Length: 165
Image (cartoon, rainbow, N blue to C red; front, top):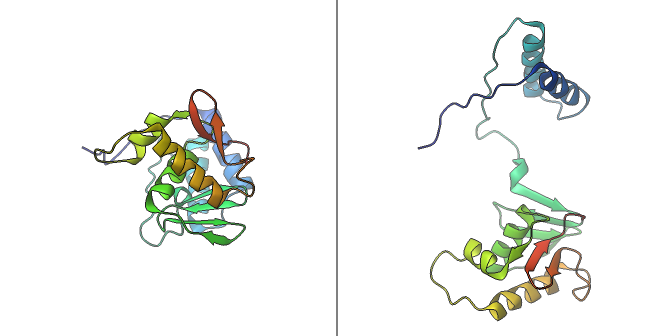
């Protein structure tokens, strides 16, 4: 069952750090100003706790909805991928594999782990099948598929999405 309210205890140094980071950057919104005021109330002792609520439908694109990796942009909810603002047509499984790897940048996955993460029902696990999907995906997203920048092969283990792009 999903929790309705979560309690996180912050020490004063973290509150000050959050306040400073938010004050110097972040969006210019009413919500930012309200959060700054709440953090100030915590710092000066006029409030002992602060309750946060995630905005509703009026929110702009959530951070988790777009995964930006260099020139590659993955629009998760729209299931759309662009490179240098040009849309790339992917099959549903290609998109799922790309999204899974990009969400876990830098983490190495075996072919079996990729299979388990992407295929929901029983499907014949075959190393060459995953390799074929990766090969097709590279042809579509990589500027030079023979020298991949995004999906890297970790020899003897599997694949990872580069954490340097």
